[in-house]
Image (cartoon, rainbow, N blue to C red; front, side, top):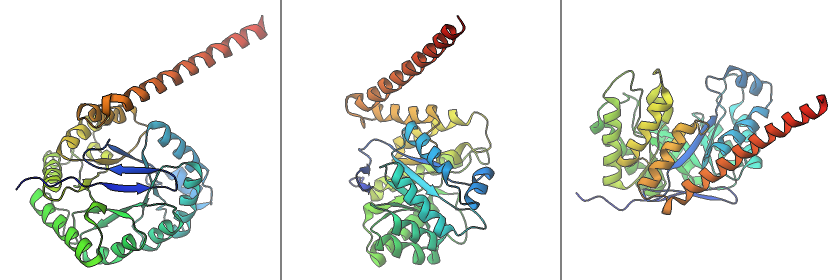
Length: 310
């Protein structure tokens, strides 16, 4: 079976468009606007304080994010109301497209209703109930959706079972809900390598088949792979370019981690997804200019102190 033509997934804010595709630059989806594992942030959100979101947006944008994931999953809160407020706030701070992230159907709809543009929904599984709950929202709001090939029975370890579940998701989404193939983004289930040395190969095999059989775009939680291991940025900076050669076109990741972002941008150059390396060169020049400005500001401050003393 010869590979099919790669598909393009279009995401939009009110003023900017980002395209996921095998012939496009890798899409960095900034993961930081998420209270999971952040106790202080959770307490702030419970108190109605969203100020930390402003810092997270600024940091993820400065790090080179192309899309921002927004998750407001905090226990003991009205997640729908919180996600709506967060989406409105983030839209006021940046023109990057958003990935609306929640396991609560009501919260997803509130976030999608508040969003101006074409969002990515994170996420749906192959479970019948979840497909019935999430896919109508994807269709209603003309969104794209991240789909994970696990069901009520298991998170399959073998690539073959994952592919069977991808086929089910594709069939249900396209035939029962009329969602275009290009709006289905598959997560191959990149799992912690520290728990099982075979999971990296399973994810890579899944990526390759998804690319060759359907031409679908793909994503993963990049930090999952290195969870529990030392030297996590090095693992991430190795894993993502490897996965890109197998078909990975985006990842949900912390764009503040320069080593990992640099790795995918360098891979874009080497894979021919950054014409003449202009994006790489521009980023390098901008970074150098910022460093020089910081050095100059520090020198000016030292001179000011010396002048005041002397």
